[in-house]
Image (tube, rainbow, N blue to C red; front, side):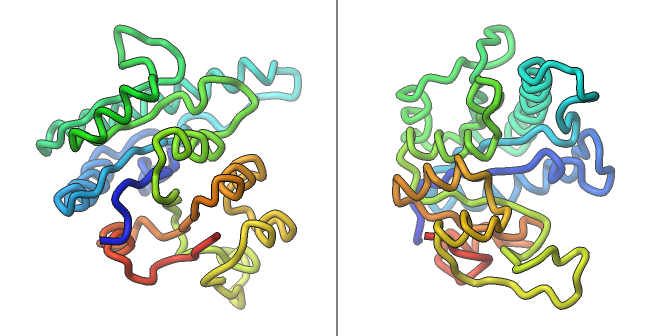
Length: 232
């Protein structure tokens, strides 16, 4: 096993499946089932989930940015709760924590409590991003990974890794198997935002970009197979 503790970044869109919006609960159960198989290997898994299946930013140019970001945080919380429920259905011990206090809904994020959950073999799902506006869930992934001392940030996408250009638009797009933080920043490769990439670089924490839609990719990664794109 290559990674003992990981931070898995899931997009909100990955939970929508073919629906594109909202939550496809069958797809959520599939993803949670794959994560369950990884926990059986002894891997400690924390998850940051996005909210793009509900909210993609300001609805108009006059909308207050902070308000828009807080709406997005509520979207991530809905996704986190859906993941938490799915894990419970398949017998996985899970805790949902939010960066904004919602006592009736989930635990408030406390670093030491999150680490204690992971030490006990529980999956921890983080909602609300960092809990502050102006920071993306990518940045939240890098931050939480640093706080819990994860071995790597695994970013789940709908493509096989990082490409030199958009593979959905260009048939001749070439996949990059390995690159550096500096190249990602300089070439604007759109892996994670610059704040997240810079934090991972500062902490010397690898980022692996992989396709979550291919069966067992997550398990293969954790076992050390050469899947996706490696950034370090």
